[in-house]
Length: 265
Image 1 (cartoon, one colour):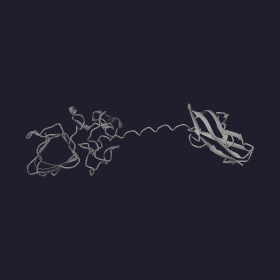
Image 2 (image 1 turned 180 degrees about the horizontal axis):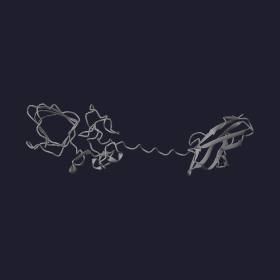
Image 3 (image 1 turned 30 degrees about the vertical axis):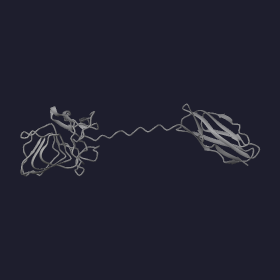
Image 4 (image 1 turned 180 degrees about the vertical axis):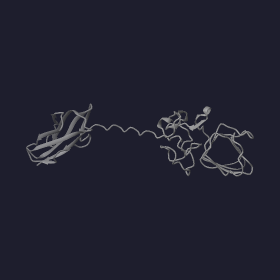
């Protein structure tokens, strides 16, 4: 139990785990504190004020009494102390917690452990309070309790970046004329996006005069290229590339998009 505060005390910041009793002539502001698991000897309360006690951005267990003004940012959640039995009141953290039992300074990476739970007191302090001494990642906000804005402050949890979906394999025509002369050569080039090797390649084509689909198979070794003989009369040749990549049949243009069109002049 902490003793009654004298009237000279104007503010209490970043204390932890103690009960609190203010005298009748005191005017006190409490901020960034944790008051949990204790009782005052005189009243049996977590907090008792017989004068003016302003509480904001604190984690206070139920059981307060007296004249207390509750400001913004207060919590009533288990602060998740590391080990009360050994007086280790560091806050458990999924992101990283300083463990003094290692005997190492907080500047040593081996002095830090991770927990399966994350204290609600991390990054829960007054947004106006300084936090620059806290190790990264610090969430840009002070922790509650004695460790706030110290090198021993428990770290914020930064979730891993979501895995990017694997890009879908694609086949893409990289070169195709828009017009050729009669009996000319239509040269088509294509590639497999992602660089995945094609299991087979073929060009499918037909004309405005004859809708019968024809196809010509090609080597699966890049660069992929095919040459078609244009008809002897004016028409439009329609074509698309069909390839199989990673077991999936792919087309460019993709169905139901219209095929490439080559005007035979």
